[in-house]
Image (cartoon, rainbow over all chains, first blue to last red; front, side, top):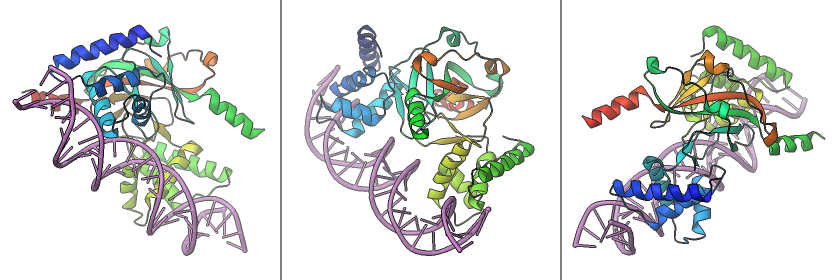
Amino acid sequence: MLTDAARSDRMELFERLCHERGERCTVQRRRILEGVLSRDDHPTADQVFEAVRKRLPDLAMPTVYRTLEYLVRVGVITKACHTGRATRYDPRIDLHHHLVCLQCSRLIDFEDAGLDRLTIPETAHVGFEVTDFRVQLRGSCRTCREDERKETS
Amino acid sequence: MLTDAARSDRMELFERLCHERGERCTVQRRRILEGVLSRDDHPTADQVFEAVRKRLPDLAMPTVYRTLEYLVRVGVITKACHTGRATRYDPRIDLHHHLVCLQCSRLIDFEDAGLDRLTIPETAHVGFEVTDFRVQLRGSCRTCREDERKETS
DNA sequence: TTAAGTGCAAAAGCTTTGCGGGTAG
DNA sequence: CTACCCGCAAAGCTTTTGCACTTAA
């Protein structure tokens, strides 16, 4: 979960970038961004919709989809890599890593200085330009392992 | 792309595991597995369906979905982490990494001994059990960069 | 022989599109 | 003012479910 300070920095960054691009900083855009920033999981469009709708009852689903893509384009949120079916958004734009549960598709943020120091190998020979990286540690989360244990016994 | 030898090893592995589990090794299951193994991208269920249907015209979509999940459960293919909407399957079950294009969502296999040697940090304190890992190098692929260059000029 | 697996039809879930009206700048 | 953005309705993909029939073992 982002700190309050980090959240308000990001809101300011958004307002600045939005104006620089000559685009409109609407109530919907601000609330949807706040909606993503106030979560520590990696919400789907639908989860953001349900959360933001509480304070903005007329909000429509297409606005959520359009806005989330817009916020990614502006660079104030990112898309998370996931194994499931619905697109998932990530409030973080800095270097961090994920624990990926292969049973329930849960994504958990994971911080590790050792992983951050990874040297990015050369990818020019395949014509790819690397801007960033993520390490995904795959396995099973606490909840899924506990569920499995119950079933066995 | 897997070599012919690797493909036939995987088919044998599947037949063995399938029988050990007391389940049936049907034509559909074998063809769908072959369908995934003969690609070097990370196909969606629909792409597998279109490819396999050429040799098995009565194949139905629900069979493809059920079978792909089954093949993952048996352990002869894996799910790939992706940023898009449709689930993507990976013919590889060994340690390897991905180049992720943030523009077109393309996933490209990437081999690097340095990345393979990464030491997996401790995750017990968050209750997570790691079985495997992947490094994702994020950026833009050759095709997307060429397209961008065309638009600019 | 017979239970597991398949195809079909239909529903459910996720995402996009087109358009008329509303609003930030 | 007015171009950009929103809400609505509808359509377009992706995935799952229930059931009767088929087939691997």
